[in-house]
Length: 195
Image 1 (cartoon, rainbow, N blue to C red):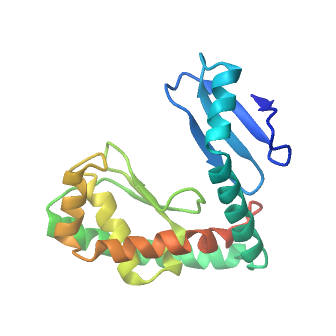
Image 2: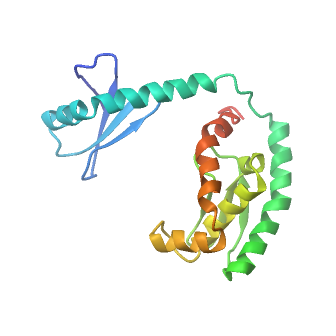
C-alpha cells in the first residue's frame, strides 16, 4: 500500500496493487483508494488519476457532504439493538416461511445480526443472515430483502434471470430497493463502531 503523488495535492490517493486486471476506485469521505494491477506503471496510474480527476473530486465532495449531513444522527443503544433483535427474531422467520412456501424454495437457518456492510446474505448451503436494522424499515422493504435472498436459492448471482425471479414475486421491487439505497447511509449511522 502506498500513497501516490499527483497534481491534486489536496486529494490523497492510496494506491493498492493486486492481481486484478483493471483499475477501480473506492472513495470515502476520508480517503480515495485506487486498486491497480500489479503490472501497472507509475505512468499508467498517473493517467488514470488525471482521466478521472473531476469525477474523483465530485465523489469526495459528495461523501463529505453526506458525512456532515448525518454527523448528528443519534446512535442506537445496546438496549434498543437487543429490542430490535428480539422483534426481528419473531417477525423475519415468519415472513421467510411465507415467501419460501410461495416460491417453493428451501433454506436452512436464519440469523439476525448487527452489521454495517450488508442488509442480508444467503450462503450456498441456504443459511440466511439478516441485518437487525431492517426492523427500522417499512414491512414491504423487509419483504423485498427476504425475497431477494430467497431468490438466491434459485440463482446464486445477480443475473437477469435472478431479477426476473424477484420481479415475479414482487412486481414493484425496484421501489422497495430504492428505499434501501436512499436511506442506507442514515440507517447505518445508527450503528456506532463501539456498539
